[in-house]
Length: 263
Image 1 (cartoon, helix red, strand yellow):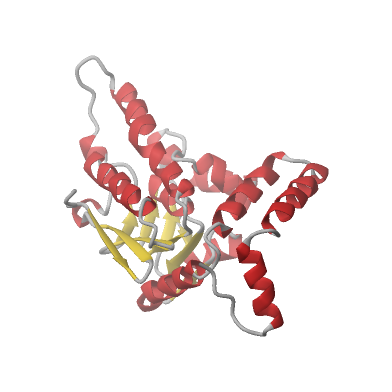
Image 2 (spheres, one colour):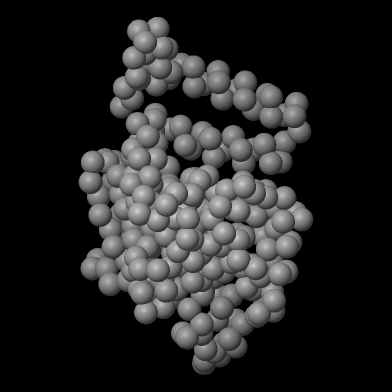
C-alpha cells in the first residue's frame, strides 16, 4: 500500500520505518497507526530483513495521541471510541514490534511524549539524540493513566519510584537522564543519531536470527519465575540451543579466532 504518514526503506538487510507527519509532531493518528501496522507486517514477512530501525522525521519522535481526531459519535461515547481504537489498533502496534522476528532499534530524534514513550520502549534497544526527551503528561494534564504498555514497561526499567514520578509529575526526562536511569541504551549527539542507530542495527543483524527472540522470551520468563525456576528455564534453553548450527558456528569461530558467520 502507498504510505503518506510514514516511510519504509529496506537496504542491506536493514529496514527503516520513519514516522513522518510533521504537522502533528508524528502523533498517533488513525491513518498513521494503520500505515505503521501495514509497514511492520511487510517487514515481518521479508526474510531478507535482519533488523529494523524505527525513527521519525522533523523535530519530534512521536507526540502521542492525536487529540485533534478524537470525538465521540454514533452509538459510542468518546471513551468507548478511545478504548475500542486502543484495542483494535494502538495496542497491537506495541505487540507487533515485540513479536517481529528481528531486533528493533528505536532512534528517538526529538520529543517522545505520552504514547510516544511507549512506542520507543517497545523496541529492543533505544538510542536517543542528546536533545531528545521523554514526557508523560497523561495524569497531571489529562487525568488519564499512561498507556500502550507504559505502566508495564516503566517500573521494570527504572523501578516503581521513578515510574510513579514520571507519571505523576509529568516532567521532561532528558536523554542523558534516561540513560542514567536505565530507561534507554544510550544517547548521542544529534547529528550522529541515525549513524549510531544504523551501526547498532548492523551489529544486531549479524547475530543468529533466533537470538533476539530467545532474549525476549528469557527475560519475559524471568519476570514471573523464581530463581530456581529461571535456572531450570535457562538449562532447558541451553540444552536446545547447543544443538543448533548457530552455536556450532560460534564455537568454530571462537576456536579459529574469527568473527562468526551466521545464516
